[in-house]
Length: 340
Ligand code: KG4
Image (cartoon, rainbow, N blue to C red; front, side, top):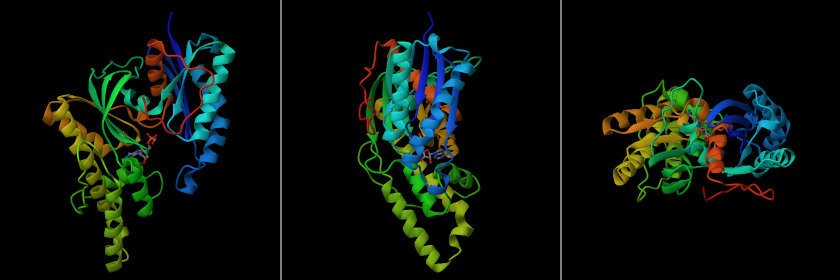
């Protein structure tokens, strides 16, 4: 009998549900919340309320699009953490209610594991192109920056990670500083395409091993802009594109330098990226270019699987389900989740 998995994702400000049959995606519905736009960031209380409103219609729509009745489901996979507690509580409670009422098991998923396995979302009528184990994943999002050695679908080793801010945070905070809005990544990405990446130079951190640091570059940009504005109050407006292009290039240089080192040290040549920042066009181009130069096989998740989505949660849940994992009904969501 086929395994039909319902995935539920509610860790931040996207309510998403997806249906997977034996690893093939039948539907993936995402409701993004607009209520945060005016606040320059996600407001946790508003996020959980919006999840409450969205969860029933989003799950119903995912089942309808997949042509699957609730009774057909084999298991329900859900994001347990990390994320906003109130948001996670909505998805977790919904998964529990479904599990109880349909008498099917539930399987918890670490949200980051979903990003790491995003390349395993199989789609009907699309050729399968998946990394071989072990591979390296550059996991870059609003809350994390890690280089992960993926030994099998459920066995990971974190080779390096940020010691302070995540790279997505650097994009978001600097965008706010430059008055460009939230979320910063997509705006900076767009403006960077119009600018000169070699015009300005920002100090890069010198961190041992494969770890990252992104807090210094924020300060570097802040002081640079402040000093230039003192000389010319229109500096920012006149140089927005070049500033974004140069800032983005610096972040990509930092990310790639350690990734290249990790690939050399581990001799692994299957490289993937995941997480919200993996949507960045500059990073994607650079990864492909470095891959060509160094004989890597690179894998870029489709844009729709880079930001938060339940398809990746359903895939991770399916792997865990097949490995025999079951989550008890008394599970609680967690805002931090160190273990995969
Ligand atoms: O993975 P994600 O959707 O949420 C979590 O953090 O879990 O990542 C969100 C982050 C934000 O910091 C956002 O600015 C960044 O991903 N992001 C981008 C781009 N699109 C989203 N950063 C750079 N370039 C982009 N095109």
